[in-house]
Amino acid sequence: MNTAVVGMGFGDCGKGKIIDILCPDYDVVVRYAGGPNAGHTLVVDGKKTVFHHMPSSLLRNEATSILAAGMVVDPLTLADEIKKLPHEKPKLLIDKNIHCIMPWHLIKDRDECEENIGTTGRGIGPAYADKCMRVGTTKIESLALSMIFGTDKRLASFKHLSESYMDAFTVIEPYLADTGEFLREATRKKLYPWFVKDVLFEGAQGIFLDVDHGGYPYVTSCGVGPAAINQACGLPNLHIDRIVGVMKPYTTRVGEGPMKTELIKTETELGYADDIRRLGGEYGATTGRDRRIGWLNLDETKRAIALTGATEIALNHFDTISKFSGKIKVLSEGKYVEFEPWHAIDELAGQIFLRFIEKVLNRSIKIVGIGAGRDDVIFR
Ligand code: IMP
Figure: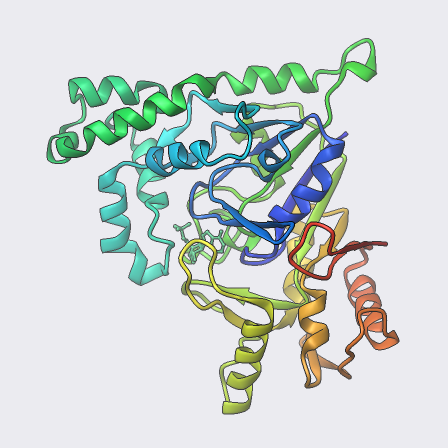
């Protein structure tokens, strides 16, 4: 079975945790888009790990974990993440066609994009732009050669960094592979169906940050939803059986761009936003920025379902909203619907809230997150 886990909003919805829970049932786990702009936080036995490039499956290291060709990677942080992986022999494959975020991409992002769009400042946009410009040599398999022979003019100003990039390349090189070929073989329908591998695709960010379907220009620089998987992985005939849309019972956003339900208009609303931010630990995993907070907008979530094809929902942070002391609001068909607060996770009022979401979205909430830890989930 092929499954995708995708974000239904602006990212930061806890996809990493859902992947960590689901991955024991899969042979292969693939991160297909974005780069170190993502931050997947995992808490196991009270120990917190944040992955920026890595599929969250590498914590268990049972499945083969893949970084697909559609990603961009920062060689220095990627090498660092590899070195810090908890297993000595990580089952990791990195596509040799991936492009690298180079020092000038970081500078350009911070100088030109960070303030206007509120990017994560990790060089994502400029790296994808260079890739599409087809200038220079930022492809990962040619990174070492370009460092030695300086085929890219811009490298001259960063010669002092070349040693650290060479070191990083040495760490990364053993994992480089043709992952497209690997995945086509793994998902090919064979005569004996039990040989076909189960693949889990790990989305990054959320569908409203998709470069084609999000709120341009306040978006990231690649496709985000399941529609991007075929291209990013080189899997033209892939059929995805199950698409898990991950959401929260409220909205968050980092960076610029519109947010209709943002809690910002009055002192009371700002106080509510502070409460939810504090209760949910809503601070960026990559940048540490305060996340903007708003009520859940089900009109937008319906559009997210249309764009992602989500077949079911995983709703995280149910514990957070259960701790909120005031009335909870949800935007549906242009009007706010109010819910009385509840406190125990299994209280009727909380179940009514979940049922309302399911009814409006016409999808079942199959997984409910009730805390940061691996075991803090309810399967329904
Ligand atoms: P970039 O991807 O760093 O270029 O940033 C573009 C927009 O996407 C900004 O609004 C970022 O805050 C947002 N963004 C990028 N990655 C993430 C993420 O993993 N979570 C939430 N927002 C993100």
